[in-house]
Length: 397
Picture 1 (cartoon, rainbow, N blue to C red):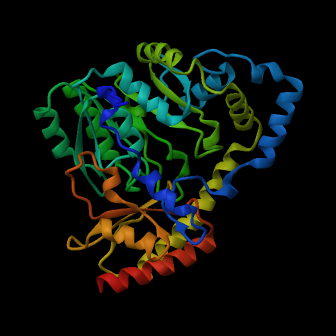
Picture 2 (tube, rainbow, N blue to C red):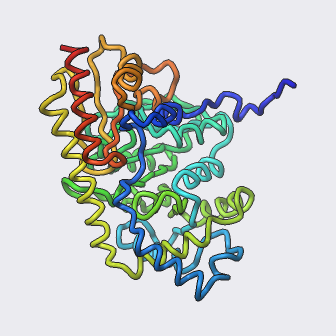
Picture 3 (cartoon, helix red, strand yellow):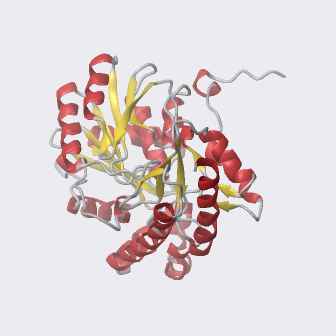
């Protein structure tokens, strides 16, 4: 039988990252291609104790249906925490728990965009969100990035020339895939453009608490006085991605529509995981936990960057991140990046992600690749980066 798929999904392709990860089933392959938290970052003992207590003393809470908006104590905690960060304005915002940050971004698109409307994003950008946006047949427009974030001049030009611009999607902190951080000046400029051209900013911030260098930069949401910013984040990098627990802080009318769409999608997010997130965040030394995570990723990042600085071909340039999980490396223009990535995994047993996996348009050209330092062990980083460094010298020098 020939299957005819809907227009919304017929053009979607499997994530190139997931395809590359298939090579990692080979035990000889060292993977720098994932984006998982470090195994040592999981608070396993604390979660085991909290979960055992919950299932013993309040099992129905964890096992029964719950409300779509999310576990009330967790929402109340997040409203206070986000208010302290400037990411929740009690005079006009509401907050909903979602099944990870991915659902937060997908539902925001669903409630605001019609087919053919324009969504602008950084180029390159996170493949998971891009596919979510593509599934709604929107006009997806990428704007080039600079070292300090999206190019403001090119962004305004897109705002002037594209029709029905409804959303600007940004990852301002330690962007996936480039690791770049948007400057304060550009965050202010972006918000001013939103007011001038009347669109919504979707600020995706899964890595904001993982800053291990430099100074904190205020969120765009903290500048919002007109209800123009949707702020999404997640516990995936702070506690557990397997919990699939994220959240959205946004103007109340937007949250009301997200609630209705979420009821259709999954009724509510995992309540057991929500209760664990709440009890963990309110009973442990939260600051000490976050500092532990930052220390883990600082060490791994510095280790990986040291190899790039000292042993890679000097023809490879890169962005040194101040937080998050990723390093963005760029090859010379005359080097075939896809062939480089294929050779790395097939001949050298090192899995890296080709930059065109994050392209907005198939026709876009990329000479970059993404490295992840959170998932491999320090020993794997040392071994893998020695091999990758030798490969760059052999191919480029």
